[in-house]
Length: 406
Ligand code: ATP
Ligand code: MG
Ligand code: MG
Image (cartoon, rainbow, N blue to C red):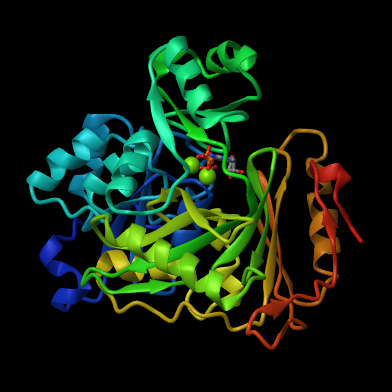
């Protein structure tokens, strides 16, 4: 029936992409998490079929994808098999088998963004080296191979000192802070030891964390979404305020740095650039994600083109859409809920009902996650062009049972 998902997959070649005049394409996404799911939602309006590769049988994207191939995006044979069926290959997670992507590119497989970009980004140290070579401002950093090296870094950069794993990091897992030299050893142990591949960053005394989503088309055209403020709780993005409340000058600086960072990478798609704003108005780059990002969920409701639609437009070669906001301001709360069967899960619908009492609020319920979004209508511009936000509610969000809207 019209609503059913396709079980057979017709390979669509590179020459059949819309830029060559064919209306329908098959986009392969490595990863089927919440971002993959939202890509499927956007694709459903665009005559684009999304196929996902994810090891989890009931991954968030599985029900919405045109086809879900159950398998690891970190396994070479599986990625090769998956790639054969897709017109263009993209990612919703950067921790994929990049050697295989490089091999596939040599065989003519169309990866967007390019494997070279994934290689740089999936190793945070390599990422830092790359951006410093492109004159992007960053916290100072250095590789550490042993305790002596870590002590030298501490002497150089001072404390607190941020120690990071080079690879496989997300949600702050892979970061440890040493407040003094005495804590170096335990911080390194907590990260799994030097064999894991570690480096350190000088502590960035930020007053705000910002993010800019940058879209790049296949023709290298670049468009930036308005810079947002991100507030983390236990290293997980908790609140996003869009646009960030700051002067035009800082906004321009953040956008320029984000755009230059993305220009130094190869391939099409949306990229999220995480930034620190320091008290002396410096912008430093934290890291880049080569894919849609949780700081951009609000774009679904608050921008003319959502980051998901934009990513699909970019990778298949359609014209990029307008990234500007159609509401004066938006706020997103990321609520970590509970899995089906866990205590508190049954409260999901009560929570959703409460969230929907707020005019303009939208809920995105994604298995474990509840996105709660308010597109405010009462933000006004001040004389210097910055926004003064009048947030009309404050949320206190914890595990689902503690959720409370004031
Ligand atoms: P994500 O889930 O965004 O991928 P991650 O695991 O890659 O996170 P980072 O983005 O490197 O981790 O760091 C997580 C958080 O730690 C940052 O958002 C910021 O709050 C803090 N942080 C990271 N680097 C520094 C630094 N050099 N100085 C101070 N705080 C930092
Ligand atoms: Mg990261
Ligand atoms: Mg981060």
